[in-house]
Length: 76
Image (cartoon, rainbow, N blue to C red):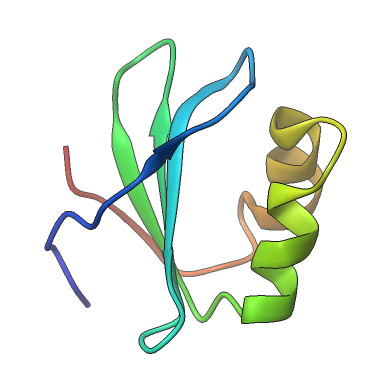
């Protein structure tokens, strides 16, 4: 599992500060607004990232489609 921080873009979300995605390693990286924690989620497909980043609510998408469904590690 990777522990290297990737480049993230700011996102419009009450739950998240930023999101990044590496299609070659299929890693989604999220920075959370409340805790400031940065987590990586593994095995996240490019199609799933496109759905996530275009979702009306990134926080809702995270809770219903990502949390607990992918291997994860907190890197910060």
